Image (tube, rainbow, N blue to C red; front, side):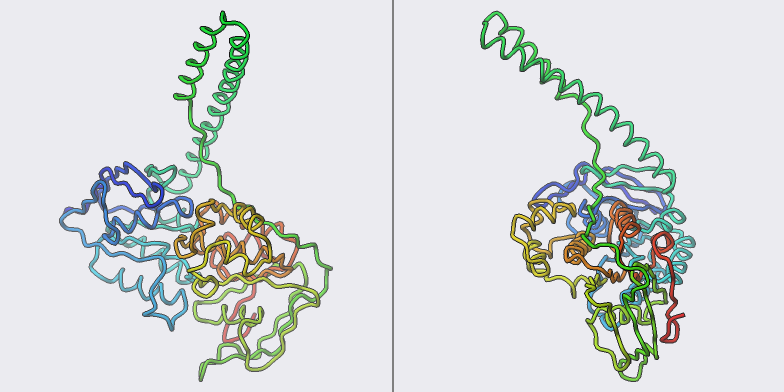
Length: 444
């Protein structure tokens, strides 16, 4: 059976080049993770492999026996009545039980609850075709893939081993490159100083002109061949001016909350008491009402009966998992930010740069951002209001690995109150003090 893939000289540009000269080959069965920073072109490359994006430079060739199936990152509105996780499960089930022997999956584990993530991992383990997946779930990457494709600096590098070894090898490689660059940079500065010195002498005395031009050429040759600076870890600068809140002061109190959609009772006499400074997670299967509960706490959704109390003088900030609800796609990033934060244009630009947005991106429309970049914009919006209470509904969905780690560090150090819904087990285990399980409309 010809179960193979060959990528030859593939390149893609929009306003700027995304990647160039990509050459890869795969002989199935294989399980490969495609990773890289948000906006680096991962989704575009996966679309090109799946025939959803034109290949204008280079070629993508599948073996004669391959049947390719592609899962996009943001699902359409044909499943609008389902939750984010339910939408993904429906599509993934269709794909795994089809006869397709190539699966291209763009962040398939986003929105999935813990049980469904386990199901997904088992389906991947049993799949015997070619699977190429974009995922930022560290546990999944660690347990489920055999190779890593890293999209960075406009190129894709293959690492023929799993995620743990990749992390070690990549870290060692970047450390070595950083050292080489620092040595070369010191030499460059030394030569630059010599060029300036001889330039000053040549200006005063023609006898030094020849030495000056020789030193200038030496400097140019060195710069042309010196090792390039390794890519910086684009760790987003998460920050707020929130101060530590009084211990034992009530931050959130819910009493006998009820909520139903028609005949479907989602929340039943639900009660919850969270003190200032506590960090809690709410865990439940998809469709159990976690997002409904967070929307009630934040005041975005009306409840049928009960009481909701937020501590006096405490400001809540909310992150929703649905970008279509939280962001105006036709607005520029600056305009979208200024809806939430009353700051002038220059301060808004500087603030967005802390979240790893470029000058060009800041001036463009939200609709041109990748899923992860939209997530970063949402985080920028609500953290900029300096909330005392963070209400987070699946904040790591779409975020690249570097940003997930930065968010994790920020939440650990955050002095305020956190209410977190997340299926990222590593994040939950490291950040929260208490876990509540939502079952039959009540918290346990």
